[in-house]
Image 1: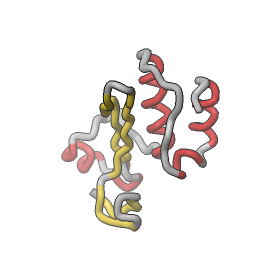
Image 2 (image 1 turned 120 degrees about the horizontal axis):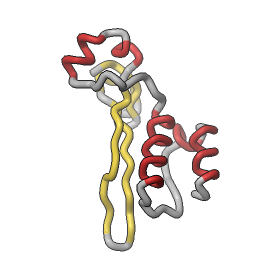
Image 3 (image 1 turned 90 degrees about the vertical axis):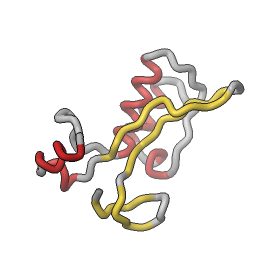
Length: 106
């Protein structure tokens, strides 16, 4: 854990931050993917990463970049989607918005 902004608390706290991808249909809803947002300070500390069980290939990525990767995986796997929702950190990201528009998602 590291002190970082978390929307749940609405302030900087000692927290782990993750991005989740959920799917909802008339039949129900389920979490279908997740990514841990690894703090920048951890990346330069391989012992800390190893102790926390963070895989070697994980690097620093913004929450919108993590969301974009998860959405691409879901769409590539054939998960149906007509639209996507997220808070302002996602809606303000031009790369994520472009990926959604290219996929035909609102």
